[in-house]
Length: 119
Image (cartoon, rainbow, N blue to C red; front, side):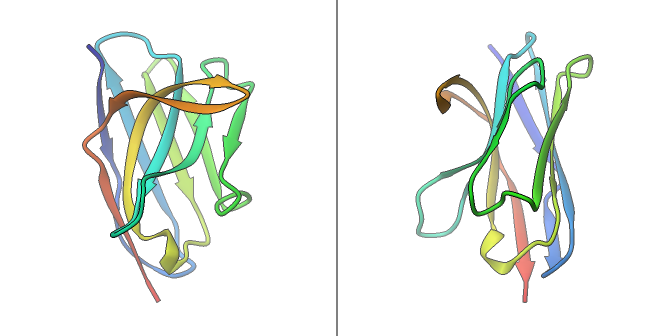
């Protein structure tokens, strides 16, 4: 059983930056990703990365602002978020997934970390 623990959320002004972390424990994990869920909205894909780091993917809404990275020795994935906008406000979740053309989530989630961007 893999456990995912996120950290790094908080309150930031528009234009600011935050770096989220997700540490996986229990076994080595392969494809990992980030999702987010804003109040009253469905959970949506943000970014994904393969174990080899040769493939990453992003939602159009965050492309060129967010960067996903990982350290396999630490079993940790990060999400660097720059130029944050109020519409980025959401609970961000770490996820184990797989790629089949696009990123698909498996049923393995962290507890989430709140990101709030003030205007």
